[in-house]
View 1 (cartoon, helix red, strand yellow):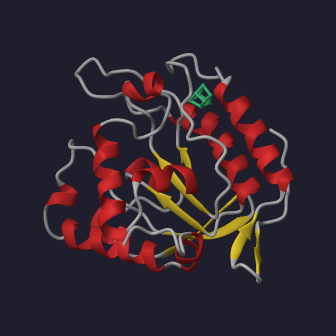
View 2 (cartoon, protein in one colour):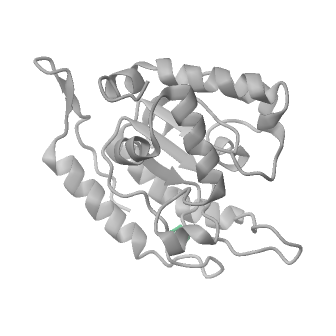
Length: 229
Ligand code: SF4
C-alpha cells in the first residue's frame, strides 16, 4: 500500500469553508476504487462495502458490514444504521444524508464475514483485521482526520486498550495511527444485539459522547450552517 502524504484541507478565511485540494479527492477516489476490488481474505464474502470518497476531517470506523450492506452498497444500511443515524439526528442535529455526504465511513473490516454456525455474524479473525487494517491506515494517512469515531468494541479496540464500555464511552481520548494524531470519541454499537446503550449508565454515557462529538471543533466547523437543529 503506497503511503501518500498530502496536505490537510485548509480553511478559507474569507468564507470559513473547508478548501479541498483536488489531488486529495483524486487519491481518495483511487483508494476507494482499489478497496472495492480487494479480495485478500478467502473467508470473507465480497464485495467490500465503502461509504465512498468523502473528503472529511471526521472519520467513522465501524466493525464489519452485515449481510445486507453488500447488497445495498453502503455501510450501516440496515437496522443498526437506523439507530446510528437517529443518534446523530437527535444528538448532533445532522440527518443521515448529511452524515453520509460529509463524514468518511471506514470500518475494521470491509467485507461481510459470514454467519457463525450458532447464528449471528462471525467475528473477523485477527489476520483479517490486520489485512484490512492497511486500508484503514491508508485512509487515515490520506485524510489526517481531526476526529475519529469508532463504533462498537471491535472498532474501539483498534485504538484503545480493551476496557469495559462504561470506562470508554462518554470520554474523549487521544488516538494515533499511521503517524496521525486525532481525538477519539467512541460510541457503542447500535445493533439490537446489545442492550448496553438502552440501560444506565449506557444511556447517559451515550448522550455525553454525542454531545462531545457535537462540540468538537472539527465537527462544529465542518457542519456550521448545515445542521438541521
Ligand atoms: S475484509 Fe478487507 S482486506 Fe479482507 S478482502 Fe475484504 S476489503 Fe480486502
